[in-house]
Image (cartoon, rainbow, N blue to C red; front, side, top):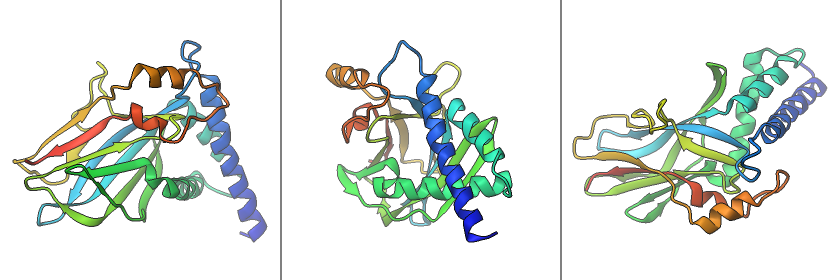
Length: 230
């Protein structure tokens, strides 16, 4: 494949991302004119080493059906590239776009911020008609869990996209939404729903479809995953 063909294919894939976001905007219920304009169903697996220290958070993002549909249709129209090639390139672009924003993830241990590293393990695929992006977010340093609490939040800072843990048919958080790679009998896991201030809810609702929220707005609507080993 020539450099021109690679550039052209990349342009089409980037257009697919922008178009899919636009479709998500247009299909949002008229009841909620403000943010968010799409959503991500989240599952997290806590990765640990033999010493029981957390080394990474393995995340699975299932994009909303509208986003997924448009992306699949656009990728299917890219000449000279298979769906697998298109998904691989899209995955790289998603990873690269998320990197400056910390992959939408904030982690704390006993109330102190935990630094993370760069994502090198990731994959993009289609499952049950949904676009799925999976990646392993490494911690800069392993974090001991014994006698400690580790918490995280995953959110779009502008609240353009809502990130929620996987739920069952009753809209209760699924037991598989937050799991441990290896059993830790002394640790309890839980997910706490967001409880935004009414003022923040109103501020998000007042945003027009072509507006982005102020940086940090999404934090007020973020669920909190907790691994409590105290």
